Image (cartoon, rainbow, N blue to C red; front, side, top):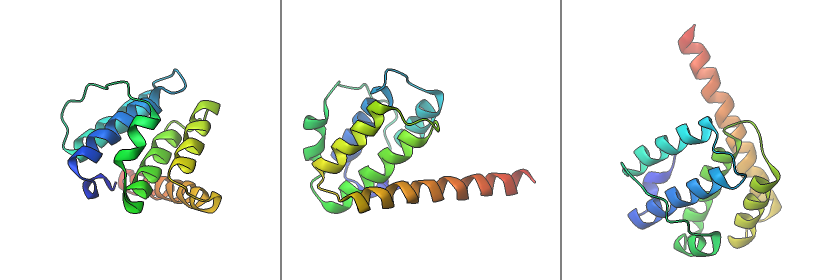
Length: 130
């Protein structure tokens, strides 16, 4: 959605974070795989081999509030893409919130926005399908 606003290093690191997030619960759901492919396309990265970095290695790359907000929105969308939020995914989202020093309200706003976006997208597909 907003990856084009990140620099190349941030886009590559985001793809690393997306892989980490999708596998944090030990289940790499089809919805997550699909969304990561969309992310790679949007980021202009045709192939990416995850390095296995952890959050403490990933977070410092996002050094501006706008890049951090983009990450929060995109990772929240990835976590909610399979309609199941696991304990591990919730912990990861909380870890990002704390690392980026976001308030509970900011995290809630990100979750609410992702939900609204998903609903609008579904409404659009329903309209297209007639």
